[in-house]
Image 1: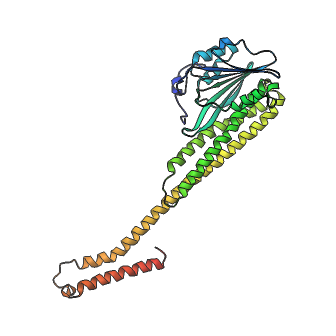
Image 2: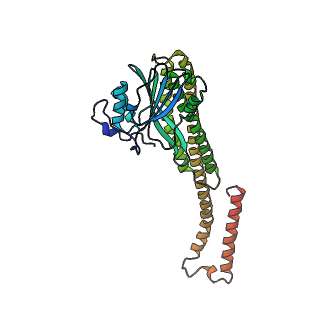
Image 3: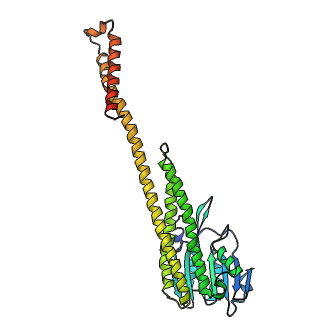
Length: 354
């Protein structure tokens, strides 16, 4: 999940557009889900293969969702059918691709990182590739276990909520990008709760734990940061109207996505500062506990220094030491040692060293 390099070394020496899959091996066959709609019609079905579909109908919008990008032959079939550039296919095959927007002849290519929160695996990141053509949006997702963040978009289209059914493919692309960005807030809420929990552990007086959990949260925040930071640039490019495929009306909505991406970035930076502060607090607590231990050991050692001197003095084997033959010499020395120790303890307490 946090591998930033992955298997990119496999592509060393290969030419541009070389199809080398970088990511976890696919465990299932590629799945194709098709949604076609216009202002009056809505149809949703699954396809066994791309050949089962004749193409988008005139005047409507088609959304073809492809789950699984590990099969190079399937991607090449899409490239041949819809005129997708080999470099785009290469980026789809590389699941560690940086989020971006590229304008090609006849289509837009958008790469995003879709994130979700799993109770067991915690932060789950998955690459999303969008190919936007007139009347058609093709979304490419990695293999999934429990759905994606596009369920809300599907529900809105089925229920004919909003203007989605009466807008073009560029508005559908906006809805998908907006769903990905908005779901970052869901992930950040979970990370915020994790930071609060780790903070309680670190600030606990008798606890020295929480460092492992804190380090994991910091790595997860780094992943969110690296995924969100390029999104602002990508959305800004769509908003500026670098492509004729994005209408002015849709550009207005993209401004809202840009604002959301900025808010996510600011929240991530805040959480990273909080996590760094918690690490500083942990190091300070460790230092304070060490100082407390050293203080106690130092006091004990200081108390025993004069006691050790007395016992070593009377441990010498000289014949002419007057106290050696005294009847009360032994209890007298013990009394002196006890009095000396108590006096030193009282002095330390008076000076607030204890």
